[in-house]
Length: 336
Image 1 (cartoon, rainbow, N blue to C red):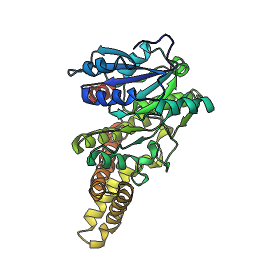
Image 2: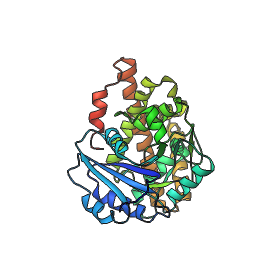
Image 3: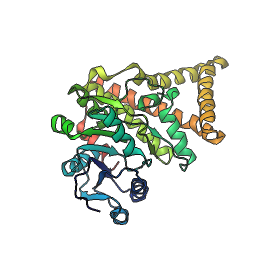
Image 4: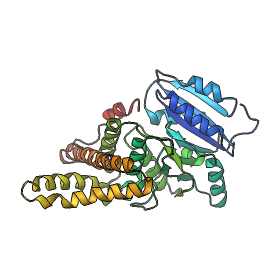
């Protein structure tokens, strides 16, 4: 579908071998109450293309569809920005499902109180699997440091993430695009803040984020998140907050309590009470005992994986003084 006027929003999404996700993503966009947007899909070296999904929906919305060699998500996003026609760029992950009033909500919020950059939270759709709902809980609960991602209880000042983030063309012209590195969205948000642009959380502009579909992939993703925090610290020393240390405290504290249990059976009591709190709160929120039990597992993975990645990177990059390995970061991120 082609329009005579320029769209206000350009939706930019990098894709790597995710045709089923893109199908669901485009289906959700087709039902938007506001159609003032274009979609820019960039296949980042995919071997399994989403061209059939694009063909299916191109009559219902304006879609620009590109293929490029695999260089990483940030380069793919920048590739899309360079070809986008809108005045405001919106970034989603390909595994997001967008509620019908998303663009109407964002436009109304920007009309009432304009900002050059915003972010929104994520949620779990009722159709998600129990594992996905448990992962969503562990990634958004204040009990697991998930409040930093836009939850109702904030553990640190909100920072937009690229699963649900937008900024103006003016920001891009002054700050530039994404850098191919760990936690490129936090890096981008930091550069936007330092350029004195206004940023805020638009809480009603949430998306349904599928995340990983199995625990092994989730563990790997979280481990990389932990490593990336040290990379950000090396770039921005003042960005490291107490909340970022908590997963490492969990790892070290759990190890101490497990060892202590060989000498005193009550040594594990604090850990057990904490895990029960995770179970209980998830049970109340999800109203499902299986999801609550899985939430304990995903929370341990989230805290443990992040903490181990953080401690490893701290030892190698800071204590041993090796610093950032940009080539390694780019290689790890390819095909994600």
